[in-house]
Image (tube, rainbow, N blue to C red; front, side, top):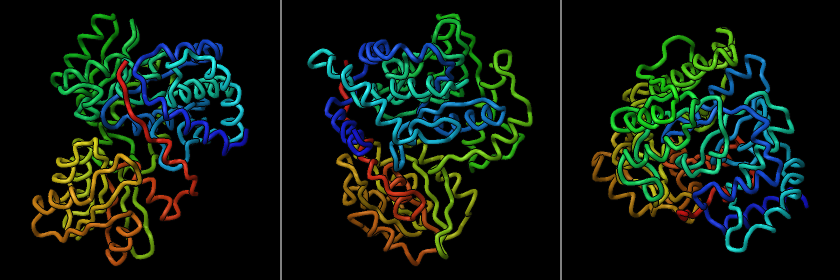
Length: 418
């Protein structure tokens, strides 16, 4: 098996969709020797900010001298981004070897109940982190929490950044239902850290109380150390990360200097990432739900005030694209709607009238592909590419920020509840 063969094998696993439930993952992990039982985790769930919070935690603990594993999704360009040790992507030979070793376990699974892409990759990640003797793993949920494949671990702390509307088709149509799914990562006696509010906070606190888990609520954005990531929402993510570190201080002490260095030096692409491309300033931000769009709009106003701005936006059809368009259109002087390179893309022809109605003074252009959209914006001094992490990943390739890996299609999935 070559690395190319391994990626094709992973593509084949997508045929099994995204089954919600832990049985397959537990079975596969057991065959692999239960690598998750040899590791310490911080398990992170939430609607928005969980990736940024994971990156902050990883950077701080790494600055403190620990060997830290980081498991996140989706990837922007390369599949290998999902599994990192001290921010080094998992090497191609390790991807190939681990999948080759797992092939017969997958083949021996009960017919009609084969492990899915995310289940296999989750166990692969745990095996890699165990082999690499990671002192701590920052472990991000894929979708929800209760039935997510990552929920096979008992962590040192459970973190729920916040609860908003997203993935309603799978997680529920009310904040309370979504919060219940995310609160499913809470384990008996394991401390919980959250910045959730209102009904969602009530659900999380009730779950924690029932399981005898101390619940630490973060209500104010963090002052103090400088952040590389812009936006008040990132201050709140930092506050969640800092509270988590404080809660775990008896287990893993961290010096103040490590906190400062970690927050000042952390790197997390596609979250208000500013790129200077010739004479252009390009902002890449994967805002893909209403709350993320509001955070992006607020940050654009704060950072660029009344500067003319071109919005390049493409959104997946299973997202609340009408609200996202309305929220972001008002900050732009020119709007270019385009397709996401995904079978789940919303049609630009559907996005355009929503943007026009939201901002009648803006020029709205329809582009069939991101390449055409960037060409239409090439004379504009400030361009924002957003609406989907898939779109931002494609932009990173086109702008030469990342080597083309042709692996973004591995982010595709269809769900089925079990």
